[in-house]
Length: 305
Image (cartoon, rainbow, N blue to C red; front, side, top):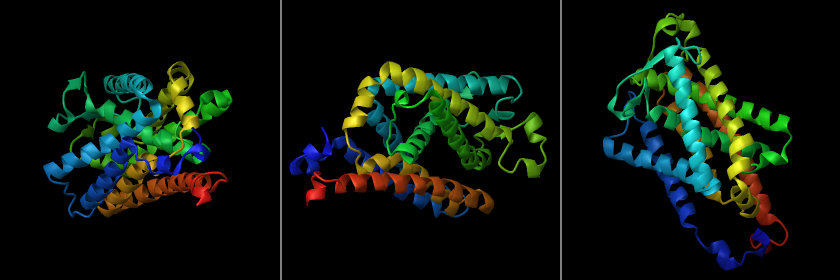
């Protein structure tokens, strides 16, 4: 159904999924900023931290389910998680050749391990890839999901490089936190690096993350979406975006700002703010422009008011 055919009552009608996304965004922004203004690197108490984690799950996973549908989202999550685990295990088993020589700790929050890798790690990496996918698609096309068959093969490959590179920015965001709180530690050749060469961890870290993001999104674009995404793509073409569809962008932007307020160190905080602040504002600008132009289009309900 196009926007121009919507009645006023349908415009006002509230989608429960959108309500959940909106509430999750408000909770996430509030909690991350609260955490950010704490001094001394203190995190939130257990109950607020649990609420924050649930808000993150809804804002990212709920958004993914809304736009991909259950079948495609499940296939993406399972396959991408398996690929990420294989990268992690290979990296540990063969001296850190993917993204540097690191070892994961055994913190209770990491949960059980498969091999040398905590289960939570590949799940978190895959979840973080979704906001990256959304941001690139919004910036380039003003859409959440893009039909890869509407592009030339070289364009799809190029986009996958962009997905991978933007995902690698997260390595700068997470390294200080992970090493400070014992999520992982650098060992062997990575630990032996000079301090000026390891300010953000092993320099191989963002390179390896880029490769993983590229490989994963290449598979999603050339295999999963064509095979399982027919209904997803049809829905993307016929269902107009709502304001809460910016949820993953807001998640990344607000988290960057919170880490600037309470950084591992001030230089890292500035890097994170200007890297993710810039890309989040850029994506939000494009997103808002799409919605405003749609609402002002001749024949739309809002445009006739």
